Amino acid sequence: MPDPVITAAASQITTCRANGHVPVIRTFFDNPTFTATHVVHDPATRSAAIIDSVMDYDPASGKTDHDLAQEIVDYITAEKLKVEWVLETHVHADHLSAAPWLQERVGGQLGIGDAIMRVQDIFGKLFNAGTRFARDGSQFDRLFHDGARFMLGSLPAIALHVPGHTPADMAYVIGDAAFIGDTLFMPDYGTARADFPGGDARMLYHSIRRLLSLPEETRIFLCHDYMAPGRDEYAWETTVGAERRGNIHVHDGVDENTFVQMRTARDATLSLPNLIMPSVQVNMRGGNLPEPEDNGVSYIKIPVSRS
Ligand SMILES: [Fe+2]
Image (cartoon, rainbow, N blue to C red; front, side):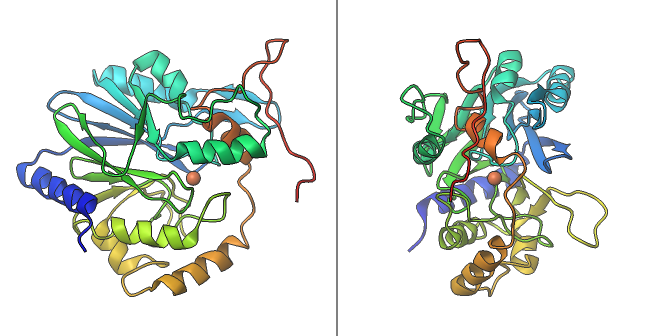
């Protein structure tokens, strides 16, 4: 049975490519966390979206910094862009979002997938966040459901729910470009892990096959690159066709069970990301630090000896 959301996204991509109605994309790469922040804009209206921003964080001292986010602000100012959206593909576990800091400086509505409530519930319990931590997504301005449409200036956009890495992962198709978060990586590196709380390798396989049923020429932009062996540059842009032909984990012909076995075995060998504790506690709050204690200071919790 055809997937109506994918059919709509595919027709948007084909039409935008045929008309040359395509966004301009500039990527800012954060080396310490291997994260690609994309600033995408409509050249006709200069409306822009910032996707998956990064706030620098030193775990030893707890100090935060906004060097990369400031570069983004400078770029937006120099290019005279109007930020309409600050989007998160998911609650990241490996870096802290700079979304509220950016919103204060350049504006824009903060968006994420509507399954965020499930993620807030899981992590709210894990970190014993208390009743003052709202688990209804209210830290965000817009919660997207699968197939939700929105505009970036004159460019049409559609949100796709692509769970697996987390239950709430989204991809955003803006014009002819798909920003796919943590699903696929570059063909020579494979796919995202699926072993975080609420993650599911089988679900990830289905989300990836959905993305790979978009037109072959679809430009896809990744959330991370870890520079596979044999390469000497980071890369974050590929196409559906290149992934279908060459993704080492999930090229055409790899069936669900083979993928799930491979993904599960590989995940068992991975250690947790260095910044998982602060990242999750900040990102589940829309990039805001936990509520300050009575001395005015925010603290990050670490559950000790938890099995
Ligand atoms: Fe992630």
